[in-house]
Image 1 (tube, rainbow, N blue to C red):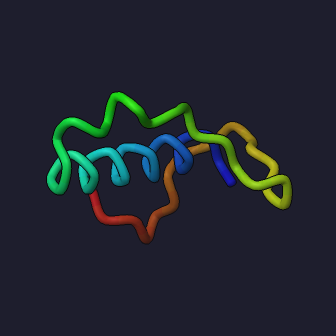
Image 2 (cartoon, rainbow, N blue to C red; image 1 turned 180 degrees about the vertical axis):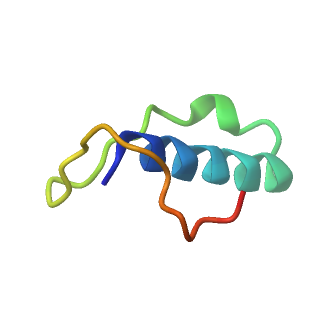
Length: 50
């Protein structure tokens, strides 16, 4: 998993949570991938919507 992909996923989650429960996003921690994934420098995947 790329670092920018992880950031993209966190932004997506933050937007969804904010829409459903505006008081909850401050409780979101920094993203931590499952041990199965190794984070490497890189961009968001090309198939992601912008």
